[in-house]
Image (cartoon, rainbow, N blue to C red; front, side):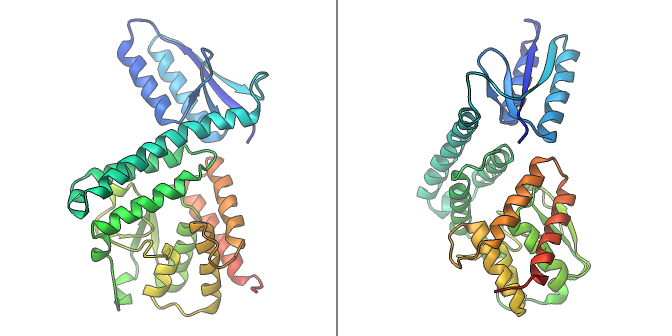
Amino acid sequence: MAGWLLLTFTLPAKRASQRVEIWRKLQRYGTVPLGNSGYLLPNNPSNEERFQWLATAIRKYGGDASVVHVASIDNLSKAQLIGRFSEARTREYQELIRELQALSSKGAEGKSNGRLDRLRNRFQEIVEVDFFNSPLQVRVKQLLEQAASLRGAGAAAPTGNINTKDYKGRLWVTRPRPGVDRCASAWLIRNFIDPKARFAFAPEDRVPAGSVPFDMFHEEGFGHRGDDCTFETLTKQFHVRDPKVAVIGQMIHDADLADDRFGRKEGYGVDQILKGWARQGISDDKLLERGMGLIEGLYHAPQK
């Protein structure tokens, strides 16, 4: 990552409501304050675009704003700066963990309202600004899946023998910023399930009617089941028997669930490449396309 971005600004005292608006956006963007100097983000195209738009808004409100590229800070090492971002995300994930544990203690009945949906959306917001991949991200994801399972999410998902003809020429929808499991699942869908599949991205609470959700914390569609990642779920549900696909499933499982069940390391490399591209601000569509290309390469590579 090439250094840091620093947003410095001032607003007229009478602009109290605009000050609150700017502060909320800074919180949502995952910034950390740098003393009285301003607000810091890792330097990537997406973060720079956000800061530039924010600076434009501040100037329209009669204030002054500058976006500064910072190579290093003399009294803070790179490790210390990363630590500040990690601490901020840790606090946010820990808050989610406490809420999910409280929710689980109420049993399935307590999950019938929109609270779980709110926690899912909050999780996605934190993941988007988890620039240095907190290990708590995996823990929260597991708790969300457990909560959804207790609420009976699996009951509405396709089970048993499904009619594959019902899944031809469909719109398949997943969460934004696709990672290794979603890219691999899209590749599997296009090559073994629905050759004319179209893909789109949507938040959990805005999945288009008539679409097929995959790898979402959603009551319908295809996702993690038991100890399986979404790729494995799709493979089993659609009875994909290709031995190369089975090997790729092991790679994706280990990379996505990080449990080292199969001792396959190849998926970790794909996962890191996707994360690197995501930090470059590549669009969701392009990220999915590139990720599917990586899986295609794995499929044709020599397998052991």
